[in-house]
Amino acid sequence: QIKYYLSIFFLIIAGLLWARIGWNGFVSQRAVRRAPGQVIRTSFGPVHGHILELPIAFSAQVGCWNPSLAISSELIAHLDEAHLSAVIAHEKGHAHYKDTFWFLWLGGFRRLTFWLPGTEHHWQELLLLRELRADRWAMQYVDKLVLAESLMRVVALPTLSMSSSN
Image 1 (spheres, rainbow, N blue to C red):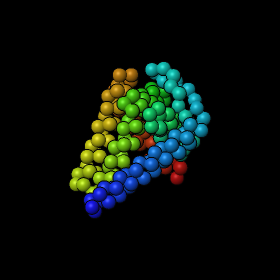
Image 2: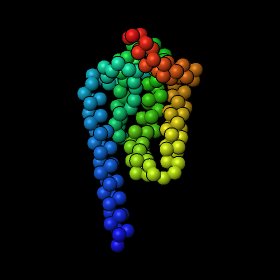
Image 3: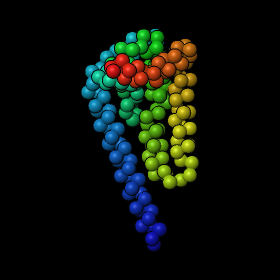
């Protein structure tokens, strides 16, 4: 009989965890959609995104099934059109594969199974594969060298911003 109580306890914890994750996602998406929307010109056509006033270079798909593109003004200020197009194409790859939806659920399972051996290793591998898949999708629309350069520039931007402010 204790097994039933443990099972019910586990299901309640899982339900509360996914409710919390869902609520945090809802709040994030609502905040992004309140940010000013803008049409961003890219090499593969205009894309609608929400511009966030953040002191860091940032771009992401925010939301569950129909995510919104969120991009920081800092990123827009530091990238030319070709490199910004590559970053946006990468983010559109995440939207194409519904990564925000699937990783909502997978992230919940990861939190529930943190105690299992190899969970963190498999999670990191899954994140890497997701990023590579988005890059592969983006290469249909932008040059792969420009894509690689843009991702390297985005990684380097926080360091540049901090060193230029000192």
